[in-house]
Image 1: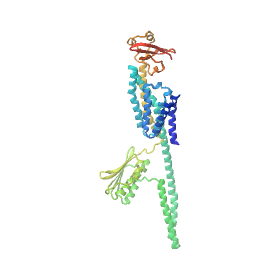
Image 2: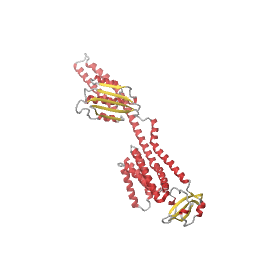
Image 3: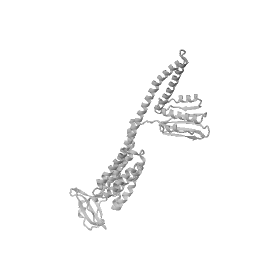
Length: 468
């Protein structure tokens, strides 16, 4: 059910604005478009980056020709698709760099294309038009794609933190149960075994009773052993004393040399202990009799553990690897293999093995600082361009009144820049083949907001006052 819901909701969020745009009786085009959207939603599960790339392209390409600020609601479905797939990308993709690369690549590719299109359509002023349209496009995509993506990543991190907290609580509870069983039940079984042993050697009992007492004692011993196994599965109290570990290995006949100037922090002492124990176990199993050297180096960010031993012969150092596989989940880096004729196990245990709640805010800040910085740069550049253009895009009202139809363009003293955006879309169609320019009126009134001048073959063919 959750999988169908995860497919149906994104489909509906994209299909609704699409249906508005293709409403009426355009049923064939609507069905085909909905099929494409449905295929994209389904394909996202297997090819997320491809679908995200296509959604960004679908939002960028139309905006290279039609300015984003002039986009009407009926043309908003490409941005709705980008928003939906942006959220899904943040929610389901673990790494941020591929998505950031897709967004940055689409925007950077759109800059020269947009400028080229505006230059082709509007002539020499197209460079500024293209830059302005691109600035607006960047801000729009950061809002409609970047914000949903950040929301998706925040949601993913919240779920991961909650799952980690649940796992932590479960581990603490297992340890509590293990301690209770180890301390209370183990103690009681020990007392019962002691009484059974006393009955086994009691002179007042005949041989049959003493034999039965021996069976009881043996059964209690087996139950105690089974209890120890269960405690081990639940998670018995963690040992962290490396010196004691090496002492036990030495007492068992294993030559071990431990070098440790500073003990690891308490938070990671258990992980360091398990790494050393696994190294000693592997050395004793695969290279019995070979001396083992253990080096524990504590650094600022992590503790490095190195366990080295000689090779007993061919095949030495090879095993099922289950112990090492379990350790990889607890360390930042783990390398194990033959180096210079010796088997070397190296593990780097980070000191920040847990993420305190106090670090959640810096983590969120690292998540949003790059998009915020990019948006800030774009806003500053956009304001600069807008201010530069706005300083000289007003046509003097007296100059406009003196213009006459048929006047050569080179005889007209026009401002250096025009109105940014695309005011042409809100006006009647210009004469065929005309090159039109738009300038703000010096004194703006309800009847006079800006002027439109259209030229054909370098001569004025239309002068028009546009009201508010």
